[in-house]
Length: 148
Image 1: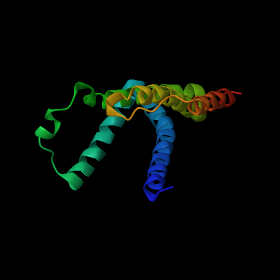
Image 2: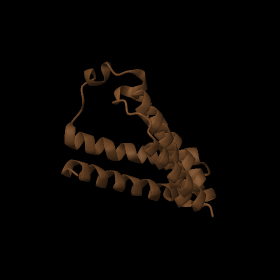
Image 3: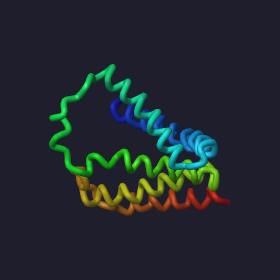
Image 4: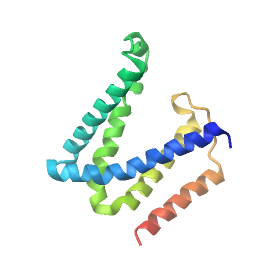
Protein backbone atom coordinates (compact mmCIF):
# COMPACT_ATOMS: atom_id res chain seq x y z
CA UNK A 1 0.00 0.00 0.00
CA UNK A 2 1.30 3.44 -0.89
CA UNK A 3 1.98 6.03 1.81
CA UNK A 4 -0.76 8.24 0.34
CA UNK A 5 -3.32 5.45 0.70
CA UNK A 6 -2.19 4.76 4.28
CA UNK A 7 -2.52 8.45 5.20
CA UNK A 8 -5.97 8.57 3.56
CA UNK A 9 -7.11 5.49 5.50
CA UNK A 10 -5.81 6.88 8.79
CA UNK A 11 -7.48 10.25 8.20
CA UNK A 12 -10.83 8.70 7.31
CA UNK A 13 -10.61 6.38 10.33
CA UNK A 14 -10.10 9.47 12.50
CA UNK A 15 -13.12 11.04 10.76
CA UNK A 16 -15.11 7.90 11.51
CA UNK A 17 -14.15 8.10 15.16
CA UNK A 18 -15.22 11.75 15.16
CA UNK A 19 -18.64 10.74 13.79
CA UNK A 20 -19.05 8.16 16.56
CA UNK A 21 -18.14 10.72 19.24
CA UNK A 22 -20.19 13.48 17.61
CA UNK A 23 -23.50 11.59 17.87
CA UNK A 24 -23.75 11.37 21.68
CA UNK A 25 -22.35 14.88 22.06
CA UNK A 26 -25.06 16.24 19.75
CA UNK A 27 -27.66 14.10 21.54
CA UNK A 28 -26.75 15.86 24.78
CA UNK A 29 -26.96 19.19 22.99
CA UNK A 30 -30.38 18.21 21.60
CA UNK A 31 -31.57 17.28 25.08
CA UNK A 32 -30.55 20.69 26.41
CA UNK A 33 -31.92 22.57 23.40
CA UNK A 34 -35.11 20.52 23.23
CA UNK A 35 -34.62 19.74 19.55
CA UNK A 36 -32.26 17.64 17.42
CA UNK A 37 -32.64 20.19 14.63
CA UNK A 38 -31.53 23.03 16.91
CA UNK A 39 -28.64 20.85 18.08
CA UNK A 40 -27.63 20.20 14.47
CA UNK A 41 -27.82 23.93 13.70
CA UNK A 42 -25.65 24.70 16.72
CA UNK A 43 -23.18 21.97 15.76
CA UNK A 44 -22.95 23.31 12.22
CA UNK A 45 -22.54 26.86 13.53
CA UNK A 46 -19.58 25.84 15.68
CA UNK A 47 -18.18 23.78 12.80
CA UNK A 48 -18.57 26.73 10.46
CA UNK A 49 -16.64 29.01 12.80
CA UNK A 50 -13.81 26.49 13.16
CA UNK A 51 -13.59 25.82 9.42
CA UNK A 52 -13.90 29.50 8.49
CA UNK A 53 -11.06 30.36 10.85
CA UNK A 54 -8.85 27.57 9.53
CA UNK A 55 -9.67 28.47 5.92
CA UNK A 56 -8.88 32.13 6.41
CA UNK A 57 -5.64 31.36 8.21
CA UNK A 58 -4.53 28.80 5.65
CA UNK A 59 -6.00 29.85 2.31
CA UNK A 60 -7.32 33.40 2.63
CA UNK A 61 -10.58 34.59 1.10
CA UNK A 62 -11.53 32.86 -2.17
CA UNK A 63 -12.64 34.89 -5.14
CA UNK A 64 -16.32 34.77 -6.12
CA UNK A 65 -15.22 33.47 -9.54
CA UNK A 66 -13.96 30.29 -7.85
CA UNK A 67 -17.58 29.35 -7.12
CA UNK A 68 -19.31 30.92 -10.13
CA UNK A 69 -19.35 27.89 -12.42
CA UNK A 70 -20.33 25.25 -9.89
CA UNK A 71 -23.33 23.03 -10.67
CA UNK A 72 -26.35 23.36 -8.36
CA UNK A 73 -25.64 20.06 -6.61
CA UNK A 74 -22.22 21.24 -5.44
CA UNK A 75 -24.04 23.39 -2.86
CA UNK A 76 -25.98 20.51 -1.27
CA UNK A 77 -23.21 18.98 0.87
CA UNK A 78 -24.05 21.01 3.96
CA UNK A 79 -27.73 20.08 3.70
CA UNK A 80 -26.83 16.41 3.40
CA UNK A 81 -24.58 16.70 6.44
CA UNK A 82 -27.39 18.41 8.34
CA UNK A 83 -29.67 15.44 7.67
CA UNK A 84 -27.09 13.11 9.20
CA UNK A 85 -26.32 15.30 12.23
CA UNK A 86 -29.98 15.85 13.14
CA UNK A 87 -30.84 12.17 12.56
CA UNK A 88 -27.87 11.01 14.63
CA UNK A 89 -28.61 13.42 17.47
CA UNK A 90 -32.08 11.90 17.78
CA UNK A 91 -31.27 8.25 16.90
CA UNK A 92 -28.26 7.62 19.13
CA UNK A 93 -30.35 7.68 22.30
CA UNK A 94 -32.75 5.18 20.71
CA UNK A 95 -30.29 2.66 19.23
CA UNK A 96 -26.84 3.38 20.70
CA UNK A 97 -23.60 4.40 19.03
CA UNK A 98 -22.61 0.99 17.61
CA UNK A 99 -25.92 0.40 15.83
CA UNK A 100 -26.02 4.02 14.68
CA UNK A 101 -22.58 3.74 13.11
CA UNK A 102 -23.31 0.38 11.47
CA UNK A 103 -26.59 1.72 10.03
CA UNK A 104 -24.70 4.81 8.86
CA UNK A 105 -22.12 2.65 7.11
CA UNK A 106 -24.86 0.52 5.53
CA UNK A 107 -26.52 3.64 4.12
CA UNK A 108 -23.16 4.93 2.90
CA UNK A 109 -22.30 1.64 1.23
CA UNK A 110 -25.67 1.34 -0.50
CA UNK A 111 -25.38 4.85 -1.86
CA UNK A 112 -21.72 4.31 -2.74
CA UNK A 113 -22.54 1.24 -4.84
CA UNK A 114 -25.00 3.25 -6.88
CA UNK A 115 -22.76 6.32 -7.16
CA UNK A 116 -19.82 4.20 -8.34
CA UNK A 117 -21.96 2.16 -10.75
CA UNK A 118 -23.32 5.23 -12.54
CA UNK A 119 -20.20 7.39 -12.23
CA UNK A 120 -22.17 10.09 -10.42
CA UNK A 121 -20.70 13.58 -10.03
CA UNK A 122 -17.81 12.77 -12.38
CA UNK A 123 -16.57 9.70 -10.51
CA UNK A 124 -14.90 6.86 -12.36
CA UNK A 125 -17.46 4.13 -13.07
CA UNK A 126 -16.86 1.04 -10.93
CA UNK A 127 -19.10 -1.95 -11.46
CA UNK A 128 -21.11 -3.65 -8.76
CA UNK A 129 -19.29 -6.94 -8.18
CA UNK A 130 -20.11 -9.91 -6.00
CA UNK A 131 -17.28 -8.90 -3.62
CA UNK A 132 -18.78 -5.45 -3.17
CA UNK A 133 -22.20 -6.99 -2.58
CA UNK A 134 -20.64 -9.33 -0.01
CA UNK A 135 -19.15 -6.30 1.76
CA UNK A 136 -22.67 -4.86 2.04
CA UNK A 137 -23.97 -8.24 3.26
CA UNK A 138 -21.33 -8.28 6.00
CA UNK A 139 -22.41 -4.81 7.10
CA UNK A 140 -26.03 -6.01 7.20
CA UNK A 141 -24.87 -8.94 9.34
CA UNK A 142 -23.06 -6.47 11.59
CA UNK A 143 -26.23 -4.40 11.90
CA UNK A 144 -28.22 -7.47 12.92
CA UNK A 145 -25.51 -8.55 15.39
CA UNK A 146 -25.37 -5.06 16.90
CA UNK A 147 -29.00 -5.43 17.96
CA UNK A 148 -28.69 -8.86 19.61
